[in-house]
Length: 53
Image (cartoon, rainbow, N blue to C red; front, side, top):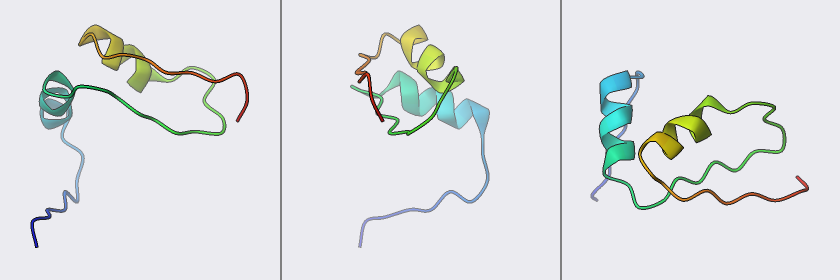
């Protein structure tokens, strides 16, 4: 019973979550230029990529 739902987007909260994360996983079949990946790199989060979706 330990769960929490965030209904609206908060940029400061998103940055706090990324700053405290160990890894950033964004599964996507198509993402031509993902801003979220660039933001993750800003916080030094490791990136994992594949050549197919």
